[in-house]
Image 1 (tube, helix red, strand yellow):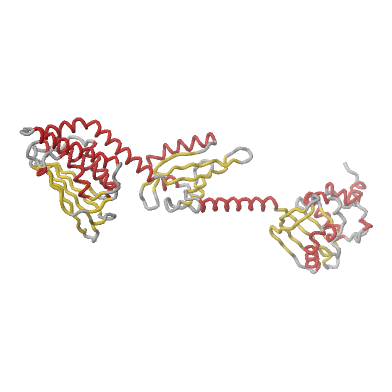
Image 2 (cartoon, rainbow, N blue to C red):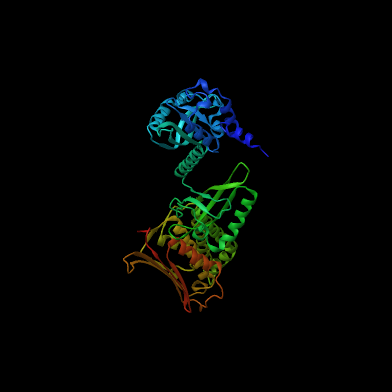
Length: 491
């Protein structure tokens, strides 16, 4: 237990406590400063000194006209290698590099005014070299016993790390923005577990995301595609490796497209994922071309497998009931040459474009048993090479079926192909192609849809942007194609 006399002795110690800086203040020779020895300090100065020494916040007291500096342990850390030389010095001399700034502080404070600065940047020599420092500063006057301002107390909170962090973030965002503007790819940012999309520049292909959203899968993905994509995401998150996947998306215009997406994880100092940065390329056209190529290759394979059967059927039609063998041989030879030319159209080796009627005639001519059993006519239009190829494939398939099972499989059947253009109710130009068989054996609807029917319906629908209807009437097959004329031009 402390005796009353000892308690009184401790209460007379000034300043009381204050850690390392408090000990320095007690042992400092203040008689060499304008403040004089501690014993002669006014009570107002002692009170504010004790107060600042108890605060965990960096505080410095600038007393008198010269701004003699008295501060606490927290401020000594801010002062760096200038501590403890700053203690008892004049503020204009202690921080000579910002003397003008402190002149203004002293002028305003000793006049009874206050000042506040947020993220104030100053260049200080705290560790032997100039360095930029950012601070939140609050200055208030300190009055003496007469009520007049005798000093200025400053609360100093350094914000350098926060400011530099914000600058880095802004620079990162500027680099991200520069990258997004420099590339034609879709770019995006994702949260660590891909639960939230933070930003997306869709380049008009996908809808932009300006603020974070957790509904990105519902917005962009088809329900049936989500489980597979989620498996790829989960594996990338688990292994902290590059994510990459090609998948379908809902485009801005509501249609379905394809993207190839690739994203890399951004790791913190502990190796944990803080964000994903990714880019995606529009591969819709490539996917369509690949699908189309697969269709063409499938058809070509189908044709190769049927070439002998086709040759046999043409031979049977050519040599049936012939009386002049040489003439029949010449017809057969001509039809073989025409069949080879049609194959050239299918592979595109020598073909850069065709008319509607020209493509149809060249595709079906090798299969027609006799000239009068095949009629083509009507309005002609120019086709793009890709559209003409699709139409050639379809016409070939129709001719093949007619030769094997339809109007050309006997001696009397006939095929008529007619083309026309018209305007619909909205005034839009359209084209109509009709393939009509008659006079052949009775026709029954097929029990299942074969590859030929799929090629005709899907291929023409996709490439011509219209509708295809196949009607298996008893007298013969009728196939009608109805499509927009644009971007075709009348021939």
